[in-house]
Length: 525
Image 1: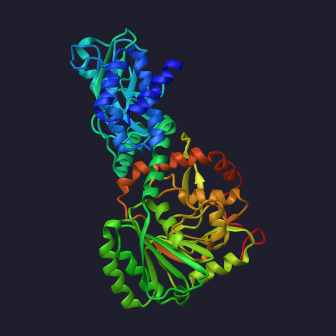
Image 2 (image 1 turned 90 degrees about the vertical axis):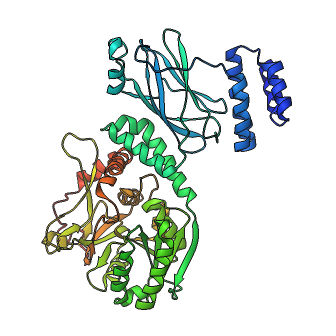
Image 3 (image 1 turned 120 degrees about the vertical axis):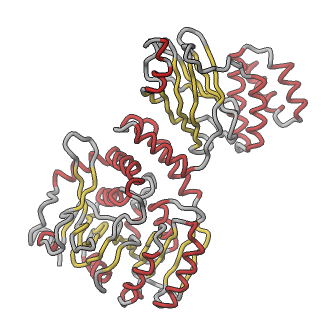
């Protein structure tokens, strides 16, 4: 142990020396060690050196050079339908500098082998027990001539973590050590570091293994949650454009994310401009499709000149999804209350915001207050949210009370407590919003954040309410292609159930979604 410690210190010191001195030390002192000793030394040095120096790309490159001298090279795997051993890595994705996602396949004659991934710096991670394994019919077909001895779950995918950062896009190696004692290796393709592309790819893999419960629980959740943190964390507020003179001390700040459909801005401002209450509110738009910044600025100038209603536009450095956009808006807002509003929500008539504020102030412990939302044909889209589970399934879905019935349906005309409301239009006290952490960031792009917010508020002792007197039209989901949202919606639904399943079950034991609260039992006017 003492010898290894001395060797580690000498090698770490040599990393700061010139290249010739480093190579000489490697050849003279360490190249003759046994393979296991070299591998252990390399891992210890890589971990301590990267932690001590912040994980720079230059240090990763020097460690990669050390790895190439010290590591035990294995025979390169040649994929051949006549050879019983096969290994391929199809992709490696960077979640952040320390966590990664890998996919590929491995074929061997006997079970019990090991798959080991080696980072460019020399970190070794055994994937054998942690990888998600699945059948690969294409691999089975390719090796059909060898019989069925290797017909196991050849495919593998895994989320894994390194003990320290890795900043190189190439140089990854994967080894296959068979139960019979054979060993081969392959070079990995370049690492994909684009967080949006990485997220899409992982969601696609989860969708290919429906139901995705085990893959999502053991791998997808960790990867996607970290990706969401990275995406939101890398998106900062670049600038705030102000049109007109917003009120200095507004009671309400209206937070409205904008994504692609910039024409919604004009529709909202037209209706807002004829409502005196909106002139007293602070309007904060947040552009989540940042590539449209110049287009939005030109349109915003024209619309302010036309409607003379003050508003702000928050310009982030990158898109961060619904929860991230709302977080930027809240950071800029100054109102005592927050109204979370979708850009595709259009008021039916003036006075709706005042109705919501008066009702909210009259209550003692209201959490989130939702309005009646309508489709264009005057059918109900939202009269409060509840949760339901289809027979034979394990996940809870968000459901809208009385959806599709006419807006005049009597039960939808009753104000009452509900399990949750949609953030398409939700009023909440700012202190209460911040007390429970606001909209959570771990859902992908925009789904189920609002129901978790309401569940958090209920857990904190507040009560969520539906108010029918405030009526607005919701053009629902026109900023996204429905097919593109299916995979992320399935994942978000699973995650929501995984996190809140017990609380949801208890809530639905007490709530009848098909009934209205009767007079004298909670109805407020």
